[in-house]
Image 1: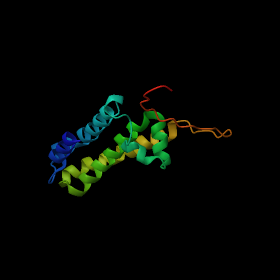
Image 2: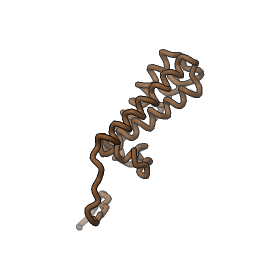
Image 3: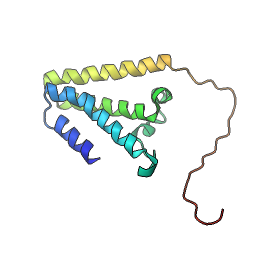
Image 4: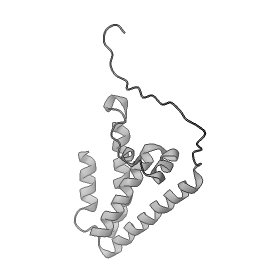
Length: 139
């Protein structure tokens, strides 16, 4: 996470200028996504504790996840927070970048909400969870 922290600090630290704000809009959410994707590889820990999974009770986030998985939800959460940081800390011209990012995120979620098929309740389902692990010795 240290490289992402340095990236965020370099782009969002202080009072970001217009070029830094424009770079932050792309680089900060993308950097977070790359780290989550790499960390999700089985040899590096697996997909546990992803940021997007924290939004499991938010209906629009569930619709977004049905299209792009938990990683798209993570990307949108970080993008919205990047926009909020820009709105609060950036110079006047760079605030526009944050506002545009918020509008783009809202339009993207709205488009997914309208486009993605809604789940249909047809009855009940049994669900079981099996956590894999290392088994030593005879089964």
